[in-house]
Length: 243
Image 1 (tube, rainbow, N blue to C red):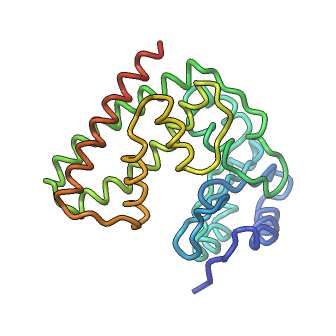
Image 2: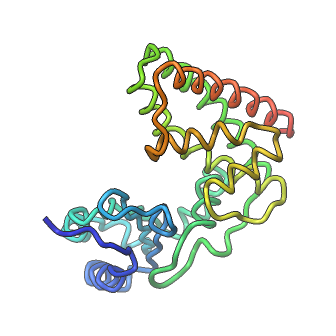
């Protein structure tokens, strides 16, 4: 089996060559995003995520990428996001949180950096924040009941949900006029300070996801109930921002 790279940058040259061979002039840009852009990348465990920017003609012929995608999946490279300029520019009202996160956490590998100069309407950002927080509150309640308080289930729910809140926190910092912050723990601390949330709780949830903290079942249940309480509080605070 092909070896995962120790550093994502070591595969850039080969990735560029492969996608150039597949798409030629229809390839407009390649961008690295996600954990592979920073210090949280773990070789062999973390996925490596790329955005592939194509022309309108290129996006109609994704079958050109079959062999390239299959080749790189063997080295922990996730199936890339294949996008066009038009798709990005017409999606900023629908997915502003996702694009803000991409803008703050990406490395240009080749060609055009479509993320660099994107601008965001605060009303769209606030609306998505409210929608995401309220939706996730309902899902967390449902998941809590589904686990019946069992340790394994709760750990899985925490691991699947906490990263989404870091992205939401980034968007909330944007709404408060704060400059982008690198590092999920710094993002958590800054947001919790602004909104009077329990930063220690959210950092513990990150520790659980990263297997740095392994609480027993009663402690985990208490943490999860506090998690629900803080998300409910945040829902009310974001609703009060306007809209």
